[in-house]
Image 1 (cartoon, each protein chain N blue to C red):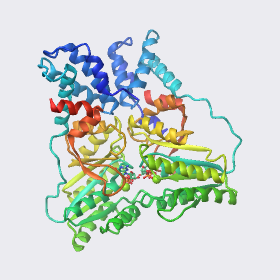
Image 2 (image 1 turned 90 degrees about the horizontal axis):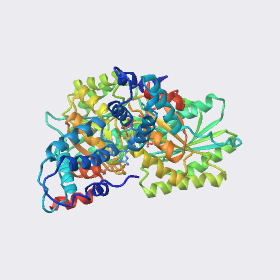
Image 3 (image 1 turned 180 degrees about the vertical axis):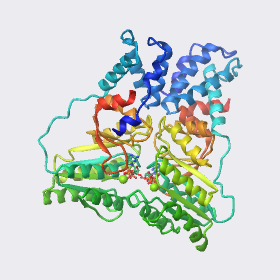
Image 4 (image 1 turned 45 degrees about the horizontal axis):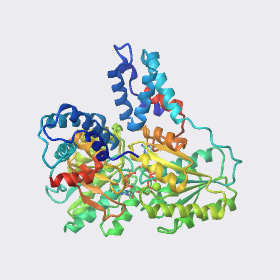
Length: 289
Length: 306
Ligand SMILES: Nc1nc2c(ncn2[C@@H]2O[C@H](COP(=O)(O)OP(=O)(O)OP(=O)(O)O)[C@@H](O)[C@H]2O)c(=O)[nH]1
Ligand SMILES: Nc1nc2c(ncn2[C@@H]2O[C@H](COP(=O)(O)OP(=O)(O)OP(=O)(O)O)[C@@H](O)[C@H]2O)c(=O)[nH]1
Ligand SMILES: [Mg+2]
Ligand SMILES: [Mg+2]
């Protein structure tokens, strides 16, 4: 797959000419983890766990196996409780500016539509120039309905109307796009909560999912993003985009671990099919292959 | 999430109340904390390593100033070194050459190029120039519409690009159009692209060779992590950048990418974006980023007075 090809770092290279896990090798592993954006804390945790198992590590294959197992242990989450499927199932997509929310919504809509589901997209980013036009093109590509108001309209009203339209038309899934905003802007976070309340007014247990989109190019600031968005909104899943570049998005490991939120999908390109279900095994494999 | 560097350094240096020369041991202990702070701020691993080695070489044997603790003395050196590396003076847009000149904006997807084009147009207008916006992104859905709307908001003409046109042709034709419209600076908004996309990187080179811009600016997200070195190195190698604009500095990112980019390319950071509004562009102050990366504005103020 695409992720595998681009996430390669050479553990074999590190081990060349060595017989055991010594201090030099640990330092090189530290570099590998830090440059994958795992951050100091997660890196130290991993290094610590590897050191404890150093007796059983004498070649690259064993080291990779231990690293993979430890990363998976940090990321693996119990499967979310299987609630009875709601109709419509309402998904809100949130995140800081430019991470790939609108594009991901296009990909998700196409994916769900491909599974035979009826999908409606709500254009609740009424702020960014041409955000509605952009989402409209994605709705066409995915072959799904879109609900939109004019520029600068109240985003909560758009969200409300989207859920109402989905109910009236018997659709299965509503995906609501929101304007990008930095997690530190209190008034904009309040606006998001208002959108959430508007959705709940129409459908009391909605939104059923709130996805936070994180750009794989982002460094340690993603921890702060995840924490503050989760505090305000209650995030149910993470989506990691732009994994088709050279960035590895290692910061998500710490996020999954500390906030106990699963990573659901990854974005691997700008095309409509460039969205994959996240698989921790495959991700860990790709990190250290 | 982490203790501030200043409080951690204080811990390290608590034992070393007396003055005298900085020794290998106390410098090393202090610098370990500085290194952590740099990594937590997203400074690249290698860049941090080299930086720490440089500071250590400078610090060893230095006399501790009467008014400072040894810890503060180390921080003083760190701060000076950081500011020196970031460049001490402000650098403006390069607009030299025969009118109309072109300024080209490049970068990864979503870094803020289109918004920054609008911001630069506002900035240039304020300086009495006549900017002309050129949408050269024919790939992203509604990218042309986006720039047209921004131009409309600020009363700056926008070249009527169409998605069927080739970006090189757009930039080329825009020059004549700008001249006709009496404009003197073209702002070329290119599509976001990955630095490893050979085909799209070659497109940027073709645009550059066609219009010979007076300035080529990499727009990079202030929240960028370790990948900042790969990104900036690739764009600089392909295009020979004139400078960098760091967007989204209005959040709580420590901005270590600024140090990585500067260390790798040696190119100046010219502006920072501090909001979504088109007026929210500021000159880059190297000394401010130093304290943001270290996360210790308080200590620095104290040291500057020493
Ligand atoms: N390479 C790559 N680019 C992506 C991916 N996902 C999104 N993009 C690009 O990233 C840029 C920003 O994407 P958007 O979907 O507009 O991001 P957004 O979060 O909706 O942005 P705002 O609404 O402005 O906050 C666009 O150029 C997308 O094509 C991905 O997985 N890989
Ligand atoms: N908070 C904040 N947001 C910004 C800043 N600069 C740009 N943005 C936002 O970041 C998002 C992406 O900006 P764009 O200008 O569309 O980025 P781009 O580089 O043109 O994106 P592509 O053309 O898809 O590659 C938008 O939501 C902008 O409003 C800034 O300085 N601060
Ligand atoms: Mg969007
Ligand atoms: Mg753009």
